[in-house]
Amino acid sequence: DSRSRNTYYCVEVKLTTADTKQRSKLREQIRQILNSQEQPTITVLSSLIAVQDSIQHLPDEAIKETATFCGSTINEVWSVASFYTNFRFTAPGEKTLDVCWGPSCHILGAQQVLDSVQAVLEIKEEGESPDGKVTLKYNTCLGACAQGPVIAIDHHLIGKQTAGSAAKIARDMRGLDE
Image (cartoon, rainbow, N blue to C red; front, side, top):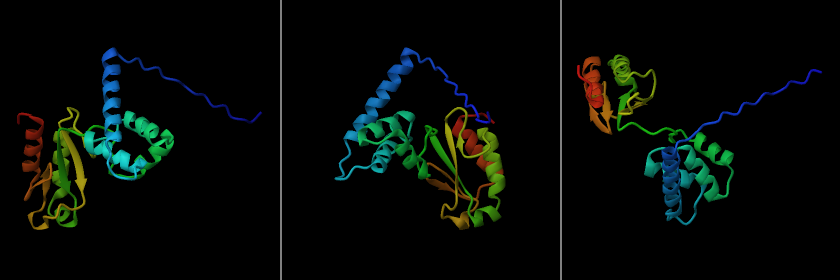
């Protein structure tokens, strides 16, 4: 018999009472957000945007509550959420650090700036530092080419960066001593 057999594993996750209460509060918050939408036509997309605008990301509970609210399946909601690159599925850091990667900044040393920032943040790509204090994002152009290389902290531009100056800023954002 040449039929293949699939093996499925089920992982049991035990939640503490605190975890259950926290998730319950989050689900209630998401339901309130969904119910407070004011536009005349409410869609899966508008619902996901409303949730992310309020809590800055889309946790699993947001997908499930949006599916229930919109009368859709979880798979339908995930297909919308995963199609758009602006949706986040993990909580962002307390502050955001953008590193410009546009042509001017690249020529002026953005790679060295990026390497130094990633080292300080202890990450190898876009994402959050392990302590959750900083979210690193790559930006194709911050619009300040004459000031390159440019970084932005929560949308506030800082130009003429070097690997050293950007690393110091990243350390300061994490509250690290030199």
